[in-house]
Structures are given as structure tokens and as C-alpha cells.
Image (cartoon, rainbow, N blue to C red; front, side, top):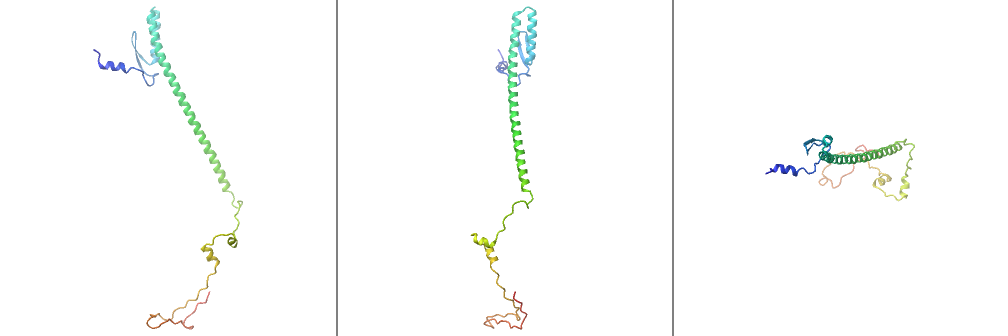
Amino acid sequence: MRSSKSRSRKNNRSRPSGNIVNRVFDSSGPEGKVRGTPQQIIDKYNQLARDSQLGNDRVATENFQQHAEHYMRLLSEAQREQEARREEQERQNRERQADRDRERQERMERQEREANGADAKSADPSEAPQPDVIDPQADQDAGLVETPEAKAESKPKPARKPRRKPSKPKQDASVDDPAPQPAAEGDGPVEAAE
């Protein structure tokens, strides 16, 4: 009876994946196992085919050639896949490089435009066009809204009345005097009106 391990090994021998070019294979040929990379196995079977041909064994020669051909197909397919992957990577690298070059060019152009705009702005201010001076009287005719600040500026301030220093301390008006009496002219200094 066979063990389950040997059966599972045979089931797992479907198609090898990964890097086939450098992978080590065990080939069960007519003269025992041949171990190595596909190129090494091809070389070994070709050598065995030459030896059997020299020994006039046509059947063994054909058998070794078929084994070598099998590994040649494996190797050529793996090399085609590698070449296709390499070309795809190169194409993607070229696209990324073109995108980077395009972005760099756009950035350079944008910086040049900004620099040119900054040069125009930083030019001598005396050469720049100057705004017209606005006449406040013309604003009233222009239909502008009058602001509280403008009202305060347009009206003259009323003159203040001079302050007088009280000569006596104030008393409670409700008890002694019904109305406070103005100070006499000679009671204290009077400030001049402004």
C-alpha cells in the first residue's frame, strides 16, 4: 500500500509557480533522476542523448531528446513571461517618468509666471498708476451715503461754556435753598471762552 505522503506529493506536482528559470527541478528520466535548473537538465539530457546515439541506442536517444525538449519548452515559456513582465515594468517606468517630467515642467512654468507677476508688482510705485484724489464735496453729489463720521466732521462743534469753580461747598438743596444761586462775578476766576 502507498502512503498518503507519496500521493500528496504527486498531486502537488502540477504546474510549478515562481521563477522557473532559476528553480531546481527533479526530473525522473529513463536512467534515474536528474536534478538542476531547467538549463542544467536540458544540458544533461542532451549529453545522455549524444552518449546513447554513440552507443547506437535509437530509442534511448529519442527518449532523452524528448525529455530535453520538454524542459526547453518550460524554459522558453518562463523566459517569455519574464520578458513580458520586464517590458511591462519598463513601460510603466517610462509613463511614470513622463508624468514626473510633465509635472516638473508645469511647476517650472508656474514659478516663472509667479516670478514675472512678482516683478511687475515690485516695480517702482511711482511708475504705477496713481488713484484720483476724492473731493468730499463731490461725494455728496455722487449719491454716497452719509456716515456718522462724515456728519461729525461737517458740523462745527458748539463752543463750550466756561467752567466756574464753586466758592462754597454745596449743601443739600432741598433743605436750605430751593434753588442754587449763581456765583457772583468777583467770587472766583472765570475761564475765557474758547
